[in-house]
Amino acid sequence: MLRVSRIVAISASSHFKHASSASAIVKCSPFFTTSSVRPNLQNPLEKAIPGDFAKWGSLGFFRTSKFASGFSPLERKPLDSIMDTSRAKDRSAEEIASIWDDYHLGRGHIGASMKAKLYHLLEQRAAGCRYFVIPVWRGSGYTTMFVQVQMPHIIFTGLEDYKARGTQAAPYFTITYYKEFAETKDLVLIRGDVVFTSKLSDSEAEWLLETTQSFYLNDTRYKLVERFNKDTREFEFKDVLRALEMPDI
Image (cartoon, rainbow, N blue to C red; front, side, top):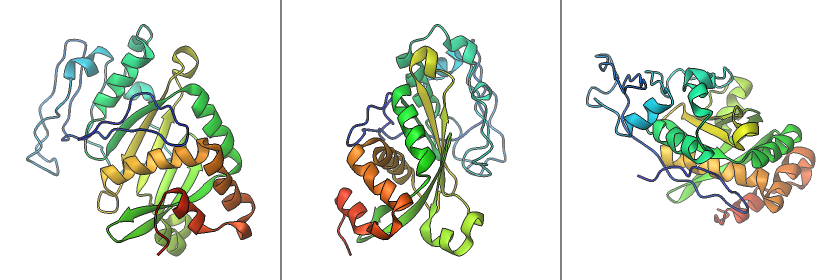
């Protein structure tokens, strides 16, 4: 499967690669040690995590059993609880991004990164335009996702669920941005978590990450976001479909 691209350079669109593998309990040390797989994992057939253990170990990454289930989107997981940030000081941005991508191989996780300048533009534009709607194409039709931007998070839930439950609607997919290396490495790390795999596939989540960022970072597409938030009466959903080259059905 494709892996999410390491450094995001977005103009009209971005190019991400998809990442997936099995889940397990792994603690990676500088000497590359792994603990045994817990017997109560949901899928007993998933006995190991394909990937470069040595790369994770070089930056002190930790694997835990909490993948998509039980994720609290607004309780930011500290970066130093995922990796040993002190070991990254002497690494290049490209090396850190590569290791970050590799570490997040696994169903329910997406790892990506972007330039600090692009993140700051995203943050600036999201401050005044926190909401949007994006259709996800499925077969002969689409389902619409409601997007809530609360930097450093982006939260996605089904539009119909949001209409029915409002702020109590459970998120399908969440994105968290880590700015710890923004000043020193010109690098912002991105972590995506699929909360409900029954509602959203990894590939759909990856597409949502790419597409949402393109609507906030591309000048032409951002006009639709502004219209949705500031001039709702003039907003036409068909314009979003047209921008994504989807049929108006």
